[in-house]
Amino acid sequence: MTDRLPVSQGRLFTPGRRLGWVFRDPHSLSRPFTEPEPRPRPLPDHVLAHAHHAHAAQRLQRRQAWTVFGTMSLALLAMAGCTRVLGSAYSAGAALSLVVLSVLAATPGVVMAAVAGHRRTVADHALARARQFTEQEHRLAHAAWLERRAAHERAQRAAVAEALEWGSAHAPSSARRLDVIGGSLWGWEALLTVHGASMLSSQPVLVIDLSREVVCRELATLAAAAGRTVHAEVLPAQLAGSVLGAGLSADQLVDALVESMYGGERPAARADRSLDHRLLSTLAGALGERVTVARLVAGVRVLLGQDDGAGRLTAEERDHIAAELFSDTYLEQAHQALARIESYLHPLRELGAGRPARADGVALTCVALEEAGRNPGGELLTDLIVQWLTHYVGAAGAHPPAVIVAGADELSRAHLERLSDACERRRVPLTVLFRHLRESSLQLVGGGAVAFMRLGNHQEAVQAADFIGRRHTFVLSGMTRTLGGSQTHTATDTFGRSATRGTSTSRGHTESSTGDGTPFGGIVSLSRGFSSSTGTSQSTTRNWSSARAFADGASWSDASSTQRVYEYAVEPTALQHLPDYAVLLAEVAAGQGVRVTPADCNPAIVTLPRVSTEPLPVIT
Image (cartoon, rainbow, N blue to C red; front, side, top):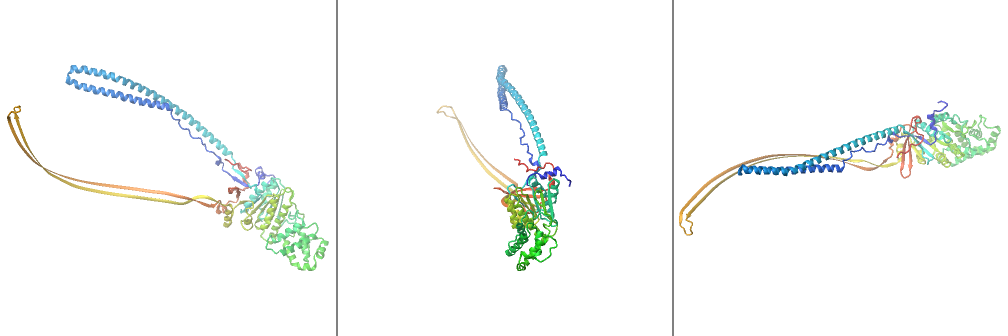
């Protein structure tokens, strides 16, 4: 790391309680060209009507002319037939007359048909000109439309090329406490870097790193390179000059030690707690104004009759504590309690032995536990750090630091609640990081804003999904598919035969006479006749027919149904497979339920182009 921070990384120290960045695809901002493609304008109604009437008039005149011509042709044919009957002299004159009359009768129709044809030609030319004008107008409009569309697309491409891709993801301003649940150590390191650097731009920051992996190292390095004053210590190696205990009075130090020894557990015997507090407070009063843990441990050893070889007490203080502080009977009764106190405080015997550092006037203070296994001394030190932090926040002046506690899983709920109340009352931003969603974190989650990182345990992921909540969605609940068919075959054969036989007989009698025509004239001649005929007929008819019919049909149907379900807004499996730098910020919006904002806390994002240190503007 160079002495001077690069400009791109320096943007991490811009104001805002930032958790990371939210990505937005610039192409999602591209707006389609909504102007419809121009269509050819319809031809004018009067031109179409004129052409229609001209065509109709020509057809009418032509029909009338053909009618007259046909009538005269029939007359000529009839005249030609009469010529053969009446003779050539008479028929020639009549035929000439008919020809002249037919010509005279057909002339007006022919003239009117010619006029109608001319009008149709004029109308067709007008229609062609109108169509040509309309097509030319459409070509010009379409070319202009193509040009506007190309300009719109160029503008959209330019806007997409310049649009921001990453915007800052800020913690809700309405909630001063932020609980971060889950995550890996790499994710925590990145989150502390981004979150802590953003708050350093407006106020001091105090980081308590209880992860035992010193995940605040990157933040401290970047802050020092950016010119911020940094105090970092790793405990218990640097207990002698630690900030723990700085700013605490003797009574507050004793209270913090007693609470740390019992870890905030309610079931602890009140008598034992009271006895320990009595012993330590009396001993602190005997030490005068300079009360430290190292001097308290030395005083306890003196009360137990042991030698304090560290030289932290003067001879007068040792004599006063041994001879005058408690009676022999009282010391005998309290011997077991003193032994217990000494065993608790022995791992902290170096605290306050040197010149203690102060967090006042320092931009970034980092107190981290060194990489070591779990032990009673480390547990006591963890509780003591939180106790000191609670008192330190309560005594802060007009410019209290923002507080970040990483790895608060081992802290008791009571201690965390006191710290949260102290920060809330003094408007101190508090960020608490839990590796797991259980015990203390499960009881405290929801007191402020909540952000989730990767949760490997399935049960914890389910609990986180329950906290984020559920929502109603419509899903496919059933599908029915029916396929059917039918075939019909019909065959018909018909055969028939018929026979007819008949006989007919006819007889007739004829008589005629002839007279002279007078009423009483006689008969001139008389004739009579008789006829008879007989006939027989017979016919036979045969017929047959054959018919075949075939029918084939098929039918099918698809049907689906949906139903309303109440399911997780974020599935537990999604929380189990989040990347290391992924953060899901869950915000409770009034009337809208829980709104989940995905973010990325990788500090390297700030070095990319088109990254904003402010939230992305909402595009409507």
